[in-house]
Length: 387
Ligand SMILES: Nc1nc2c(ncn2[C@@H]2O[C@H](COP(=O)(O)OP(=O)(O)OP(=O)(O)O)[C@@H](O)[C@H]2O)c(=O)[nH]1
Image (tube, rainbow, N blue to C red; front, side, top):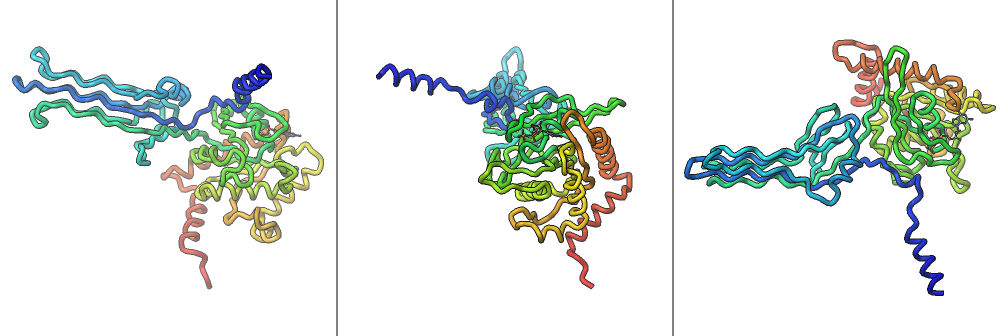
């Protein structure tokens, strides 16, 4: 009997979390960092102590937070102390700096929530803890301690396009169809449990990055499903690409079945509840699985609905209605499976829209969309004109 219990308990203890849940992706790391102490001066000769070294992070394209974590887990990352002043070396050498290589898209937060800086480009640096100054006559020749901080490195993927959709909509299939990424594809929700990033290559060597974010579901903003933990990655993308299953979505029999239009509005609502500023980003809607029967009518229905979406909203259940509806720049039908129809068109469209956006944000170019967006913002600010 005892043997049976022991064996059973041992088996339970040894059981590791399922492979697909053991994600290698880390998007937040906490560290304890300490700048070096300044060296002591030499009063007899007026010698100055060396400055303590700094701990800083530097942007590197292929770095990841997992490596930072494994290297420094449970330890204080400390820079070297400044050298004391000596008879033979009146000014002490500065302490050695410690450099942490971090991926692009990292924001550094201090323990009190203050943002120390962010890393968006290769080689960009942010000081995490400064070294203390060396001893001088003003400080009685005593070196000062370096800064000591608990910091958080928070990664938000930087991509040109952010792919958002409900589980099973075909995000991974689309990523695979238009880029060289190899995401996991399966016919059950939540196959994607970590963000995937792919690069779309064009014949003229142009490259566009696209991030596939794990499936959102109704209530993600209150942490239902995988919650909104991955929604932050949308913040640093330039264009949002919504993908919806033309057949609609039902998470399980206890949840209501949502039509394709309802899933799009629910996605809109989840983004709005997470951060309403996300709705200002240019957005494209791709209705997927157009190879299946009856989907042409669904696409036409959605295009018609978006011609006057506010009147359609009144006919829909209250729980799917967002306060502000995203004005999609394009609505396109695609079939992501086996690079079906619409994929090439979507690839070109993404490129065109990104180019237009770049022109819009260039202050030297007056682009019609820029004028339109600005006038929309003015109307919002001042309210509608009553005549
Ligand atoms: N018929 C058809 N099936 C598709 C198409 N695109 C994707 N699928 C199928 O839909 C299912 C889900 O596809 P995925 O690409 O894994 O969907 P996902 O949105 O990444 O799903 P999550 O990982 O759960 O977020 C798979 O069985 C795909 O084969 C399509 O264009 N046509």
